Image 1 (cartoon, rainbow, N blue to C red):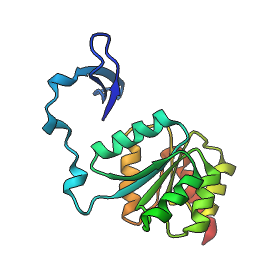
Image 2: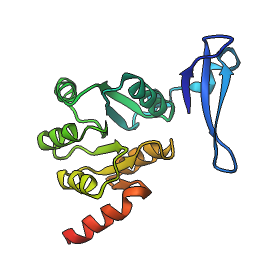
Image 3: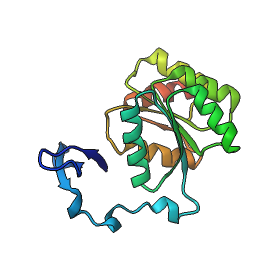
Length: 185
């Protein structure tokens, strides 16, 4: 994954995140001049079947990180907005639903989007692993729930699962989700 970062030497550097053999996260800087354009190809533009993702996050910096991560993973970011009202406007303007809508910490937006578009696959990204909160989101019809700050690649894995009409839940909330779905049967 690549995020734009700052270098003490040059502003044109990328802050990279890597996981070593012990599972520890390591940050390092790579000078932009050392990276070839072909190393950061936008494969989504070449792939007509790429998954279209919408991002709703009120934190501009985190939203841009998500955009960069998803685009670098080959997804098309259909739109990125700061709130649910803007998401509804964008869907209406585009005339088509994104394959997956990533909603960061905004349960009201998730509920509003699903009331208006029940077939929309909503992925919640939250720090909240409280049983009551997770259960309430499941009742609204979200297709997935991931915990923020777990594995940085988990959002990519979750979006891929949702795009294939599967559900996805982080390990920290999977027992709650399993219990919820068992009780539905």
